[in-house]
Image (cartoon, rainbow, N blue to C red; front, side, top):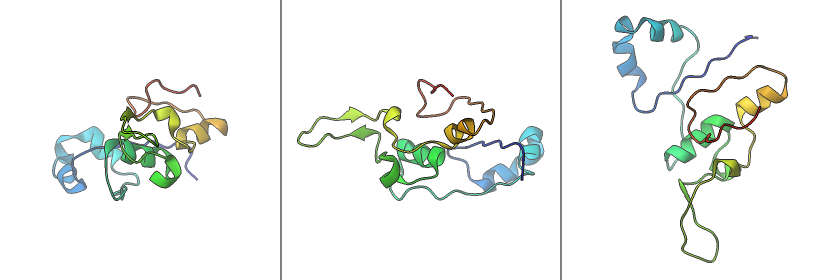
Length: 116
């Protein structure tokens, strides 16, 4: 079992595109020597839905993140999605709860960053 985990997510470039430039990006080349792969996102992708799925490992039905806006029942108001409303505990929260040291940098949906 690995003692350290480093998760790096790119939005946009494909693995094939990154592979073409690994000879020019030595730090990325070193990182790519570990496990890597393409993740399958939600069926209706949006940044909110995709990042909630990435952070928790659970789909929109479990996280409650279906779109970047919420539509309260009985009305037509559009309310920006509140990251605190994600119904599942994230991977980093579970690691912190287990006593592991966690560092976060520029993680979408985490403003403000939760206390760990």
